[in-house]
Structure formats: structure tokens, C-alpha cells
Length: 230
Ligand SMILES: C[S@@+](CC[C@H](N)C(=O)[O-])C[C@H]1O[C@@H](n2cnc3c(N)ncnc32)[C@H](O)[C@@H]1O
Image (cartoon, rainbow, N blue to C red):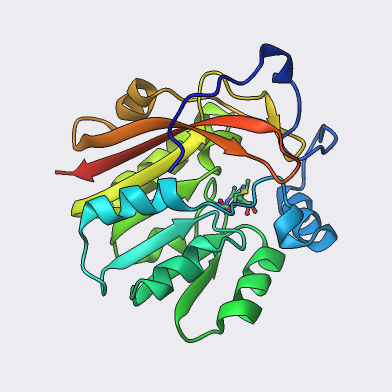
């Protein structure tokens, strides 16, 4: 696993993580993401991961049972789900605002071994009513929520839907991250910022910085953090 800090050059700030143009005005976010997934092969998406080891390292650290409920938020069409299935996890829930992304997952993995929920994390409807989970996984999703009210809704949902004794894992742009991703502005996180948002019921288990290499070869610095809900 690459955990070394290859500092993202300052001039990278302001660049998009996938070469997209800015999206301005009243965004139709669902269409925005649907188009991203419609227009590119998965392996070319600016957030496609060949190396899943940072996430897998933290997931293994939880030691949760193979039949535990795992919620992958803003899953897109991530191959992390394939890797978790390969490792024997049997209760995976993938949720995303993009039906196109979830459609790709369904075609690849089938309908039977993964539960799919189309929902908006900033206006959750279906997610509000799911049974709490043992592990919440977010890679590169929370950092798109730049509005305070959206962040509050998101963290309220984490607090409601991660069961006591469960875990929450985040992988977000760190404080040196680029200012845009997928043509959208992003918010940056340090570990103390995440801890402050999660509140005293969440105990840090491990965090590290990781430099993600985009399919284009550009580097993007991330913060990874795993919390236990007491
Ligand atoms: C940069 S991609 C990351 C995808 C995936 N987590 C991965 O690591 O490959 C961000 C994902 O968040 C989803 N997303 C963005 N805003 C969302 C929202 N408000 N609610 C749910 N999903 C959202 C997008 O559709 C997209 O799949």
C-alpha cells in the first residue's frame, strides 16, 4: 500500500480530478453524475482505482463478520464491491445518486449478491429507513458536499445509520487536495475536522494520508480515516 505523502503540487490546486469543466448554477446533480458514468469507460473515470489497498486495509482492521451489513455510499461502479465479495462479505448495500452507475454495478455483479439503493445522501429518503449497518464506507463522496446543510444531513445520517460497535470509513480530499473534482467544487478534510463532525460517539481507530494516482497519472492527496462507533 502506498502511504507515502507525495505532496500534490500547489499548482494542481484548481484542477479538476477528471478534467471536467465547472458545473455552475442550479445543478442537476443526478444528471451530472449519470453523464459522467455514461460518457466514459469505468477505467478512465478520474476516480477509478486500480489499487484498492488503502480501503481494504481499513476494512480488514474492523474485523467485522462476513455477514455484517456494509453500506457503500456514493458507490458509483467501484470495484471495491467486487473485492469485498471476493473476500466473502455477503451483505453489501451500494447506494448512489446515479442510476447509471448502479446499473453498471448491477450488470457486472448481478442483482442477487448486492442490494442497490438509488438515493441522494443530502436528501435521503430510502436511506433514512434502512436498518443500521456495521460499516459505512465513503470514498470520494463526502468531499462534494460543500454546503453546511448538506454536510449536516450527511453526518446526521452517519450517526443514525452506523450501529453501536460499528465503523465508519472515509477517504476524502485532504487539506492539500485539488479544489475541483468531476467539474464540481470540493471541501477538504483533516482528521480532526472529521472527528469534530462525527462527535464524541466516534473513536478514531486509524488515519493516514494517501496519494491517489488518477488514470491520467495526476496525483491527488487523500485522507483516510476509520472510526468506531461507541
Ligand atoms: C468521485 S465518485 C466516487 C465513486 C466511488 N466511491 C469510488 O470510489 O469509485 C463520487 C460518487 O458520489 C456519487 N454522488 C455524488 N453526489 C451524491 C449524492 N448527493 N448522493 C449520493 N451519491 C452521490 C456520484 O454519483 C459518484 O458515484
